[in-house]
Image (cartoon, rainbow, N blue to C red; front, side):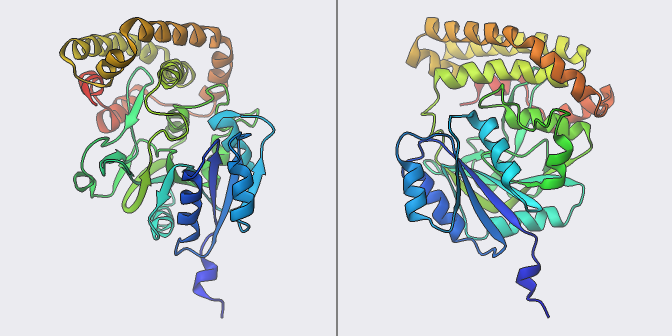
Amino acid sequence: MANAESERPGVTALVLNWNGGDVVADCLRSLQAQDYPALKVLVVDNASTDGSAERIARDFPGVRLHVNAANLGFGGGNNVGIRLAETPYVLMCNNDTRLAPDAVGRLVEALEADPWAGSVTPCIILAETGQVDGTGIVVCPDGLALGRGRAEPPDAWSEPAEVFYASDCCCLYRATMLEELRLPDGELYDEDFFAYADETDMGWRAQRLGWKSLYAPEAVVYHHHAASSGSVSLFLVRLVERNRIWVAVKNFPTWLILYGAAWSLWRTVWQVWGGLTGRGRAAALGAERGKGEVAAVFWQAYCEAAAGLTRMLRKRRAILRTGRLGPRRIVEIFRRFGISARDIALRD
């Protein structure tokens, strides 16, 4: 009789690395320590220049390593890795995450228990503070998204739940869902995004096709936030602002795009209020980098978003053919998985 352990569904842990230094080694050690035997580890290196790919090849001989000739960004690198994975489940791991030993097994249990769930996110905890980094994502009418429960104590998020979508910082995907999310040209992650908002874009496509996403609080992952890109940076601000516009253009009906534009102005009012009163991340960034520099970055984001509109409209036509999200369903999504303009503007 076959060993019960060998009958567990296979999982490929996909770690995208770019100049991961020492943190990627911690991530790989935590994957090797998992109590889930049907786990393979794949590292896709985005042309690192710090020697981390060479160290992975030397120190982790059991890990499959694929080195890209150039930095393909978050989406491009993960697209390569998902094509190389040949298991029913794919575990996405940032190179600066560290998983509790039972995390993979608990995530698999959650998806095995619900065939309509295509993704599940663990409780992601900021390693530096012990606070929640995310328990999935919440979404806004202007295409923006935020980590659910961010900066709150983990005990406040101890119940399993359905969420809008999983956080790609670390989550488990059902491979069959990923195949359904592909567009006719084979694209899964939008490589035009380069980084940030990728899971928001995929989440709207998953909602359109009727897939659910879960939160499994008993699976715990620690995240050294922004270890690859630095702390909150103007680079991050530019890509997030540009990409949230592209998310809306690609996925939203016309009425929601118009409403989202008005909602975004209301969010900006709250951010200005936060800047005047010293509250929220926008205030902190303005104080650190200067309001003029921040304004210039936003202007650059809008120019880049406009320059990419033709490509996004072409992708929009392909997405809208895959299924329909009616007004009632969209309102329900924001009721269950949304966040107010005030809360997102004033949150640290």
